[in-house]
Image (cartoon, rainbow, N blue to C red; front, top):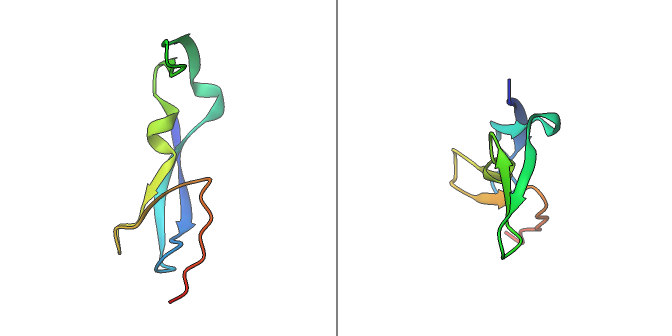
Length: 70
């Protein structure tokens, strides 16, 4: 299995949902483009680093931290 389910809470609406993450030992960098974009053998883990909330549609990268003043 290349990926696994991860349950997270939306940073915007605080509802819980399931997203997917790629297992770190399941991908390998095989080359690099001239703009330093890595090429992977198998799944591209960067496609799974963004979580999209199915409730409100808010999308964010796993490294983003934001405080909402609502």
